[in-house]
Image (cartoon, rainbow, N blue to C red):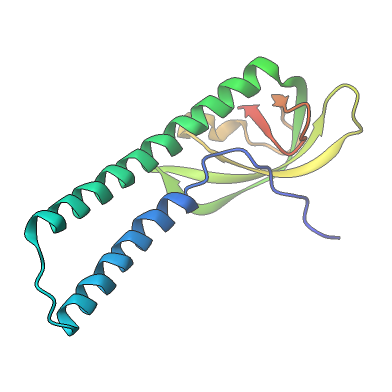
Length: 154
């Protein structure tokens, strides 16, 4: 039997890291080429380029942070109420703000849809760990158009 699908909720940081490391790599390659061809570097242009990159990087981080909050808020306002029953939980080994990221396997039930099973990753505070017993039931909000977008109230 194959694994259930992974939900789509949470912040996707992959684009942020691509921008950050892509910019660093581009800067290193450019510096190496300028040095190899003995091109004199105009200091003000270099400063402007570095400051521009920093502004883009900070903007990307801020956009990613607020996008997750906006998506959760939209889901709370327009999502369908349902229940999620815990099948299993395991730590992923990842941490956010020194809190563990836990992968939950959930059976989700919402009105108008057949029950379905998903894997959902959640940052979990230590005060919630005792609630993760198999069979535990939680309130859930599910996107009307995409059942893989959900939030669980643990």
